[in-house]
Length: 304
Image (cartoon, rainbow, N blue to C red):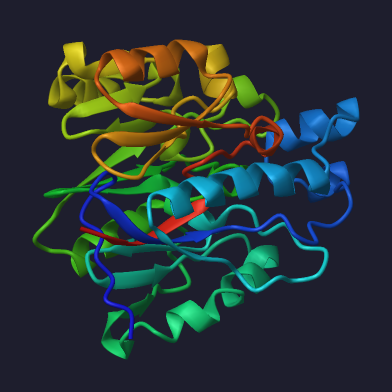
């Protein structure tokens, strides 16, 4: 049996599910894309090729091996995009919560059934059908659980709105000892620079008391201000609209000191090193074309 343990985003990682780009399938049609950035690259003829994405993911796997992290991979489904394992489930404390994601991605969830089956039954949570949630919106942070959401009446019109208020309420009920804090995210089906697909597209805690943040990702200024005050302005790295578009907040922590980051994030990586972090740089620019990066393609199972 797996002894899951996730209390925050940065404690020393011991086991993780890393998605796979194997048998990723052909370039999708525009109408089959789930986000505006993928659409942009399909139309431009620059949608990433499977061979390039495989190389990028193997570079991340190599970093995990270097740090002695146990790596699980989803079972490969033919012609299916299975890169973003963060979407399909997430772990809080010793519970694994199956995400209710877009219906046509149901197959992806079952590709990690062999891991799900190793979790004690009492710790496997399947949410009610009315709760829409994806792991990119859910961030355990010690006494808090931060959740990105969208509560507009036009929620059904946005394929980019992935986590609803029903899910926020249910997660609070599941973890009564935690403070659940939700944040309204800016959504756009058509403009990737005006779309925070998930909370980790505009915010991520790092180290013990620092964070990466993008103001425009938040619909409500006071919620952005709350985060700024919570971490302290001097501990926050503010990213620009372009940096958000390239997914600079979507790095991944192996520990409070070690961060995997994209090799082109020059400004961010310089700042991280100035703050005393070890930065493991990997190529991930092709995967980023699908509006997801390092945090999106990893599902942590066990941290210290």
